[in-house]
Length: 149
Image 1 (spheres, rainbow, N blue to C red):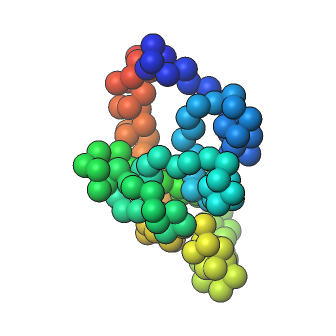
Image 2: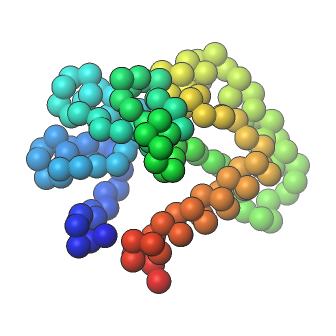
């Protein structure tokens, strides 16, 4: 891959956006929520969303799903606890997270930044399955482009 595109890692979306707008990058992969303001201002032009369907906050941008490209990368976040955490504490945290998920203000945030375009809240088991699946996808990808052996 480095033969065609130089890969540059950044610490977060703000650094990527600054480098893109500042002309230090010609292309970036980032989340729609991180660049929405720059798209709206006309400072950057999104080329494609890596999703099964168009992203709600940038509905005019084509997606890999409609283009027949099997490449779907979406945002997800998880909260983990150490394996020796008492089950009562894990259960209490899970209940609090579910309660927070259902709060109208949080649902508004999720909607405004397209986090509900894909399935949202997941149980511990569902999150573990997703993380394991994503690990395989990204490992295979990095091997295919020669970054991992």
